[in-house]
Length: 77
Image 1 (cartoon, rainbow, N blue to C red):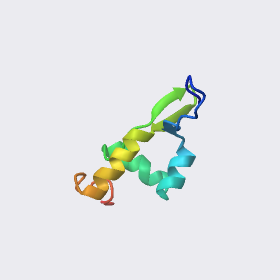
Image 2 (tube, one colour; image 1 turned 90 degrees about the horizontal axis):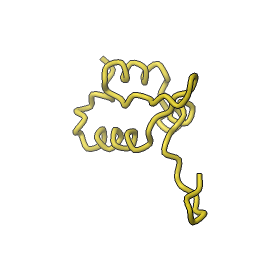
Image 3 (cartoon, rainbow, N blue to C red; image 1 turned 120 degrees about the horizontal axis):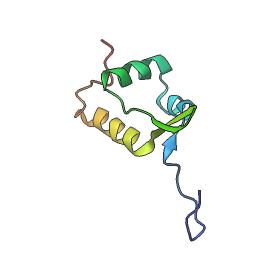
């Protein structure tokens, strides 16, 4: 994606594959966390495609590290 000046913009969304690669977690764990409201929900990009907002994922990561998430997205109950 390019802006008006011709510079490359960073990708704003992550596919399931890219997200799983970055987090090194099984898809079933993320499905469970999403269901519990402990992980950002994916956004519908088309009839058969969803993606995750990079900013929401980065915020989630920061909350996990800072402890403001109380470990909710990290614990497996």
